[in-house]
Image (cartoon, rainbow, N blue to C red; front, side):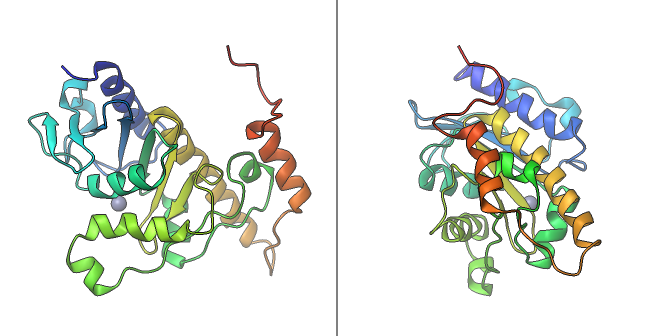
Length: 232
Ligand SMILES: [Zn+2]
């Protein structure tokens, strides 16, 4: 079996989304990529999570051709592939319909950075894509969803803001590997919930000062990061 370790990591990332309450039924999907092999491992479409096993994961090339697996891959595979091609530093992608992130996506509003929880993970507002046109929806819908995400990042750094809201749909997040991508989905949902509550308390949302935003993001992710323990 190809890529047995990555299969397990992708399975665990998918299960983490369920454990954290981000997924209803079979909604949601996580994937991972082996850059060395040019192969993507993704959850199969529509299989109940409690039955998922590493061997059910589907392996495709970057054009979506199935290399190993008997099940159909997640229908969102083309979105994942566009993102892997466009964002060369990422190793995993996660997509859920978690409710507070969806609320912002449905409102068509980026999530502003209102506090340090957001600043720890996302170095800027979490952007929202433009609405897809009817042409983009009627053909290659999932691929065009990926292109809309890439357009939303034309002026942004996907490594510094590992999340996006797809207009009227839901979030995609990414990271260095499948576990990091799923982790970012969990954090995004928490940040979306906090921002939603804050929006109910004030007339006008105010982003935190950029000095505080930078402090929190860079102490965790910057060249001179000092948050947490040294990795070996
Ligand atoms: Zn979706």
